[in-house]
Length: 261
Image 1 (cartoon, rainbow, N blue to C red):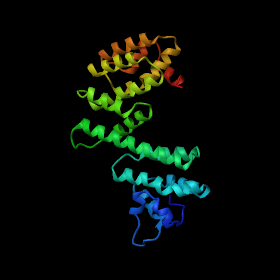
Image 2 (image 1 turned 90 degrees about the vertical axis):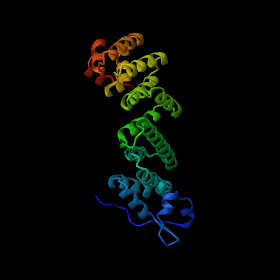
Image 3 (image 1 turned 120 degrees about the vertical axis):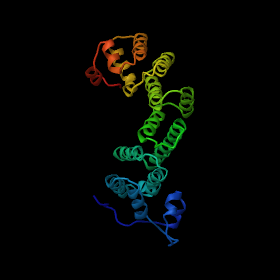
Image 4 (image 1 turned 90 degrees about the horizontal axis):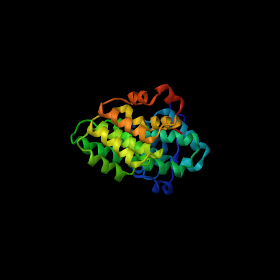
């Protein structure tokens, strides 16, 4: 699919307000920045044509959004240049366009997302302590956890306190911390479960859905104390979340029917 947008230019007054990556695209004309240059740079960075077209067409209808397009696109260009995952930023833009979010709020969200991704990458790099390839999935998941309510300080402290554990288990641990907090599980119970998962190396990727299991078990009249005790026993045996559900008397089918609200 090609781009649907023609040529648009930014005046000198608008240019002065543009982020560094937009100014860096200025050739030798010294007067105007061609918006299509910025669009093409975003396209070259890996932004899908469908996303660019939606953004550009929305800008035709909304002057504020049109004026903000260079800055919005520059977040994507920056992410590409800094080897940060593009997917979360593209998703945020698509979501904002679907909900008709104001341009200034889109910029705020993208700026925060870039900061979260950058922090997550640094944390992963420090954890690996090597030059091996950083996995985008780990960075994206950690950024999602920051959006879920865990602070950067909390995440950093958690990673330092669990330095002996493999990276995937630490990510699961901090996911449990974030999502169980959202459904108001007692902090001491959360800590005991996480400590058990790390100590006995029982955290597999499916344990990230523990909060959903707890929410479903609560609806069936089970207490948090029983759920926590059962989870710890399962983790000691390196069991799975499926094993936990079996012990609590339900299956994954029940889990799908009763999503966390």
